[in-house]
Image 1 (cartoon, rainbow, N blue to C red):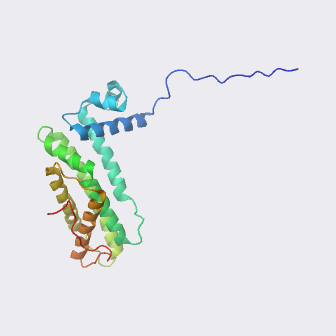
Image 2: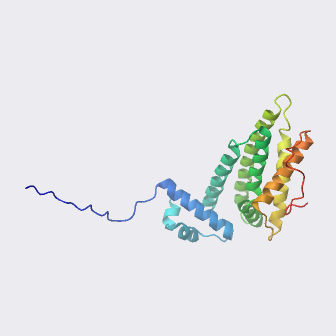
Image 3: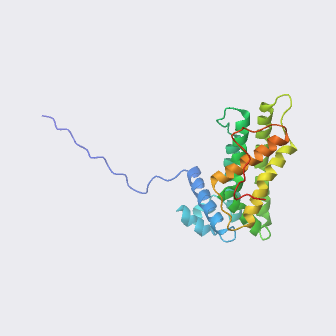
Length: 230
């Protein structure tokens, strides 16, 4: 009679599997973003970021050389996400519907809670930390370039022979959205819902199309948008 050995699987010893370098970087950036938005640049310390990310300060300093560089990482990550959001092909039946979706997406980036908090923090600290202002303005410009390029493509699809608004007109459309952000920044009690942001974006888009002799979809009638009164 043969006897079969019944071996019990050995339990792994030691620490759990370590995160990859990219995973660690992502966790640190997310933790830093949360801290910067909650406490501002001046009020955020590397120790607090490390605690939130559940890593050591040594791990953070192996990824970035300073808090300023960490902030640039946070901004860079947000910009990559924003550009991807604006560059996507929207699931729309027409170029006009895609245009409305594009402007809503841009408005969400600018007028959403994170966009307003970031802009408010930069306004409060730009004098003390001018180098951060430069990074922030450069990131805004990257988003603007992406938005303008996508808008131009959609306008060409709507009217190949005589494209509806392009170039400086895109800056005008963005300025309507950005103007609402300035009001939100200056009012600490300013709170809006996603539906209000979308409604304001649609209103700006209708105005833009109307200025170029194009009527927006009939279902989007002009309405007063609470939270964005000028």
